[in-house]
Structure formats: structure tokens, C-alpha cells
Image (spheres, rainbow, N blue to C red):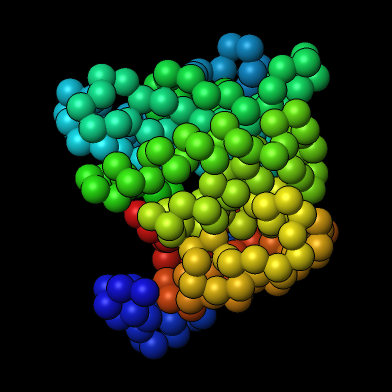
Length: 261
């Protein structure tokens, strides 16, 4: 962990989080319900797929860029989970490349993995994405070829299970776990992220600062400096982040200090 990350733990802030956690939790649940009803009521066929303006344009940023996004998934599933993806831009490139796993592609006889030139930060059928990782410069340059190879060699190209995985979050988690430059963790409601590699029982945590035990993404425990403590019960994650004080809750996500970036 960097000195900045280590110094982020502050007892006074932790006490404040505990004292106000109940109100924040209630507020988050209410906001989630209100926004969720609005978002999930949209018809995916007419919902916006416009840019959320979270990524720099190739004209603004000439260097390499790697970004990880998560947004509420489509229809009723959006009440419970998010869909995650990765966008990359090589140094000097005039476009972004995006990496997704899409369930309906398998039903149509296509590979689940979709790699294409696209807008990096599109709304996910009406749901505004959250930027959860943003690499630039040398780190991004080193990460891009690794991301591309891992995506093309993904073991579950022709398999998709929304619950408990392997799904889109399994795919992105697999890439995160195997690219040293990516030290981010997916949000607690990224169902499928706890399916480790090829259904391994034990592995490094996504932040690479701890260890994870998981039984087919259904039952598990993660302990790490980056993640804190996270318990997976039937695909629903409950946890506490001590480094950046926050609660981790199913459906709602993170309540407390924001995670990086």
C-alpha cells in the first residue's frame, strides 16, 4: 500500500462514520429505491446509450488510458446488481476499445466476450456508469496489452450465468486479478465477481493486498488491506472497509467514504 493509502485511515473519521452510518444507510436505501424505480422503468430499447462524459477524449488525452466502469444492469436485475466493463486507449490512439461480456450473445450463438471500438463511458441502457479505476501514462501502457490478451484468452467465452457466475463481473474481476497495475476492487453488488478464475477455491483479492476464499461465487470471505473484510452469502456481499471507512452492502453498494479513484 502507498503512504497515501496508509494515512487514509483516521480514527476520528471512523468514529464519525459509525455515528452517522445509520442515517447514511437510510438515505442511500431511499435514494437507491427512487433512482432504481426510475432507471428500471425505462425500456432498454429506447434508453440512452450516450456518453456520461467521464472519460477524456483522445484529443484531450494523448497518453494511454485504462478505465473500469460499473453501472446498474438492465431490467429488474438492476435492483440487485451492476454490470462492469473496461475501456482502454493506447498512447497516441484516436479511439477507445471496450471490453464487455454480454449474456444475450451466448444465446445467439456468439462469444460472450465483446471487444470493439466504442465510446468508453456510455450509459448502460439508461444507467449512468461510475468510474471506479482510472490509469494513465506508463501504468496504463503496461496494462493495455495484458488486458487484451486476458480478454481474448478468457476461459468462459461461450458460457454465461447471471447468477452466481461466470458473468460480466466475473470477466472484469478475472482481468483485474491478473493485471498488476489494476489494484481496484469491484463494488459489493457486482454479483459474479467472487467467481475466482476457473472456480478456484482460493485466490488473491482483487486489490492484491489480501486473500479470498470462495465456493463457486456463492459462499466466501475476502480479507485484505484494500477490501477490508467482505462476506459473501449466496452471492450477496456484506463488508466493512477500514482503510477508507465504509459499509459494503448488497443491492445498495458502498456507504461511507468513496473508493478510488
